Length: 504
Image 1: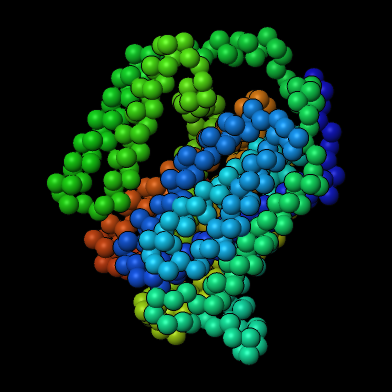
Image 2: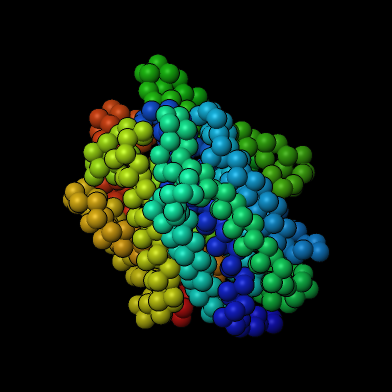
């Protein structure tokens, strides 16, 4: 087996530069979409259901794009076609989003924007696994984390900077009439669309992917191994049908209970996922019984037969992202109400608080950028498992401290802790996973792994609105505390994961 050559710093830099633009788009979305929804008239408990675009599109896009990119080889390369198509669509969506004339239009644009960003983002994870030798994979993902942090600092702070740094004569205002998106938000999205496209173009044309022949030489699997792997695809049709019926039945029962008990409408999201996944089980069973092994069969099979290390990491990912998604959804309502004492989107206090949210988002991302390059050293000295455990616990404590600190300036300390967790989250799990996956399935498994970012988002979207209304009486700050508890639990679960490569 031929060993992949070590990459220079600038090769790693060019490979990941596109992530600067991708995260620029995500950061604008995370810091401003709840603000846009509230401005257009969304009630506090309805915000999570409007955010459902992200997880639903991710649930669809990640495995499909991952599977497709594993099998794609054209003039642009293997992963790069998906970078580029997603970048064009995402840039157009960023230009359109802040001009939404009504709440339903903004919600629709959220679907398009999030799906496009995910299409560009998903192959970048597999890209590091494709291009870098195992001993450089922690470093490769750390470079991505650096770009994620730096771009998020700029993007999250843009409304604040435009409001406070530009001359008033430019006419870019931080407030607007009821139902109108402020100029600072609009121009932030316009700039984001440009940055997104240019960054992805840089990686597309400055990095050359390995050819199929080169990848085959790097792959430890011989042709006989690959044939054996195909033979293992032996689906128990009866079992798949039984599981499918159970999932459908569970989804239907939960839907009926939601209706009869007049529970939160967001719960229908969860019940729909059960029903759809059950139907897919039965479709796969029918196709396999008919002798057809197509893309749908392979994707569902791979989802149900993940490597053991991936299964354990998935629980860590789900709890961590539940905590983060709670923050993304409720950071603006929590801080504006708890720390700035206003829930009126037209008030000066609310908009001052919303702008401060952008600054805080930039803090945790800035910390992540600074921490990123120390993670390979920390992982080598203490092991990737212990490093990730400590980082997640620190992040969870950071979220919980939002409740403790009443002075909004003190939240900077909270965001330092969250930034440490964020840096590790974007680096360590992917480095652990990349070294444990077969090369010819890097895309699909990275895509499936990203589903465990999506699932907690769906759960959060389904239940957080119910909790904030029925349990926390519209006090969003308690959702942030709940997110911190989930992140600490994720850190503890990390200790049960075994890292196959301890020389990172």
